[in-house]
Length: 154
Figure 1 (tube, rainbow, N blue to C red):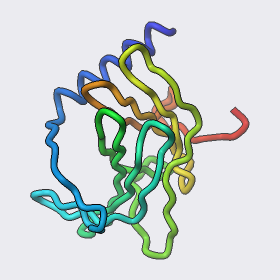
Figure 2: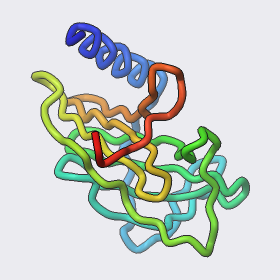
Figure 3: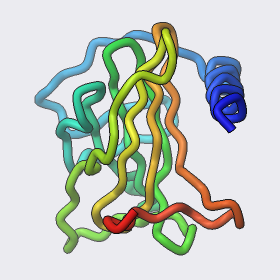
Figure 4: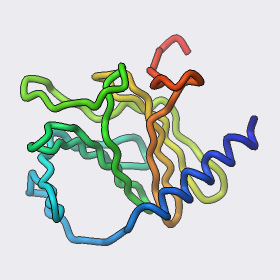
């Protein structure tokens, strides 16, 4: 089982590196928008996601779809946010958003740190791997393909 976990982590890191292009840009801490070439994201919350990453929660004002960006010690990554039923999480101006709650942090081998966390609004669980040269984030799934939800009993 341990070999499967290590293999899954290696595959996830390889996919992230091959599918993402990394650039370094100066950012302003006073700006509430993060500008890309095709869309401007509106930031709704910033904070810590444990000892390995800072988190920014934002949404696309054209579609209202919500995203998170995790900025780790070595690398950053972005992911769409989900509701417990697997649908995309949409921004609602009447909702107070908070950063993820960390469940577990630790080493994921010699070259990466791992954070397991959940969205307190939806209870959907995510994992973040902060490697020396790349970071990757993924939603966690149950064996039946449904999203894994945080349960304090487990």
